[in-house]
Figure (cartoon, one colour):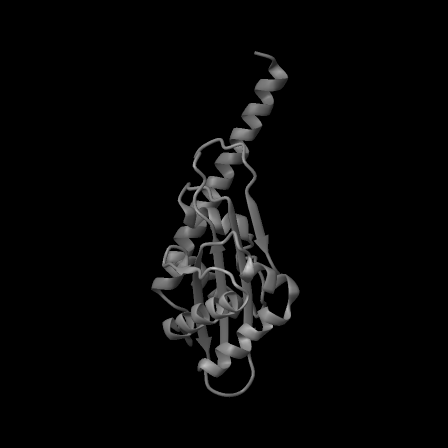
Length: 197
């Protein structure tokens, strides 16, 4: 075997092992964070359901198929929403620095999906955390062309939503994905990841 090729293969394996370790570490972090919520933070399943309803209403209005709400990535979505509270930022990097692809891989448990994406937002206006606040938060995604494209993407089939409250502030994440790739392991097909700032 060519030594240069062997070196490249070894480097790729070391990089892959590092990504797997980072992913499994992130999942453990997320599960622990959801099991022991930081002071003052509440998970809001009612707001998650409302945001799921809103995304499907928006899709229906544009002739798109409804997304199937799924618990598969709910812990991941809630973890990112909690991290946004903790860092006082809206975005796609965790409080520890993991980006969306690493976070998604951690909760995908080795399954590869042809498409995945994420929308993130918060509403810190005064007033109670209710359906009106969820609608205002969702309106941010509607008014942003990139978020809107993400939530209307016809390739997506599923959604997991995480919503948390601190005081009168609402933080939310929606994760979208398609079916798993037919090939698992070393697939040659393109994987599309969409994250919208």
